[in-house]
Each structure stands twice: as C-alpha cells, then as structure tokens.
Amino acid sequence: MERDVYISIRGLHQYVDQDGYDHDVEVVSSGKYYKKNGQQIISYKEQFAHEDKPVRALVKIDQDSLMVSRSGEMAGQMHFQPMRRNLTVYRTPFGVMEMGVTTSQLKMDLDEHNWKIKVNYALDINNQYTGTHEVEIQVQDSKSRKGFALES
Image 1: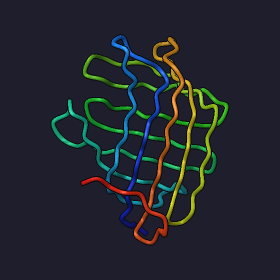
Image 2: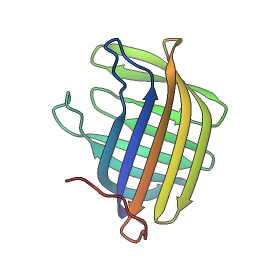
Image 3: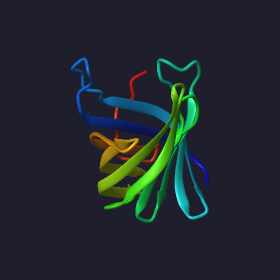
C-alpha cells in the first residue's frame, strides 16, 4: 500500500569549514511511503541550489538499519548500522569519493503514521576523518496526530 507523507530531514554537522561556517541542512518535502521486499521506503524529491532540477531520494528502513540515497549530480547512499563502519562511493561533479560511515547511534521510533529517527555518525572521506554528524528524520502522514509545520 502506498500513501502520501511529509518528510523532514535535518542534518547537524559538527565541523566548521575553511571560512568558519557550520553547515546545517534541512530538507522538507512531500513524498510517498510504501513497502517492498520487507523494507519500509520513503521516496521524495529534493532540490539544492547548485542543481537544475529536483532529484529522487530514498529513505529505506530494514529491521536494525537505515539507508539514505539520492540520485543526480551528487549521488550516493549512506548505510547506517549501529557500531559498524560502512563504505560507499559518492559521485560529485568533481569526481568520485570513497566515504566511510561509522554509526555510533541509531534510534528509530516507527509509529505507523509518525516516524522519528535519529542517527549519530562519524564520516571519513578517502580515509580522512571529517567530523561527527547527527541526522534527524521525521515522517508523517495525514493520519498523524502530531504535526510539524511545512514552510511553503
């Protein structure tokens, strides 16, 4: 069964770039929820300033793991499993990078109509540590009693 949902993904990145800026990111979008091969999946579109058109992104939940992927110019997937390091390849317009994602914490509260997920992880790119990160994901459908405001 497929149903319409709203998704909010907020990334808190605990590092500062060369210019002294933090890079916290939040994406809020409508999407679709469905189940496939035993996984719960949210499909949605996201748009970044440097891209011409929105790209497809997925959040997949499988028993004790989470996978977030996106297509487009900046394409790749991040697989989160508690106390494990997962390697992935991330494509950018500037070339391909190998990323290591070490998940220190994965909390998932998956109510039928209201999800709350929190992930803490360390990231390394080409074996160079880049910092610790936290991602909070909220997914709600129209039957959720709890709400979060969507900006238009």
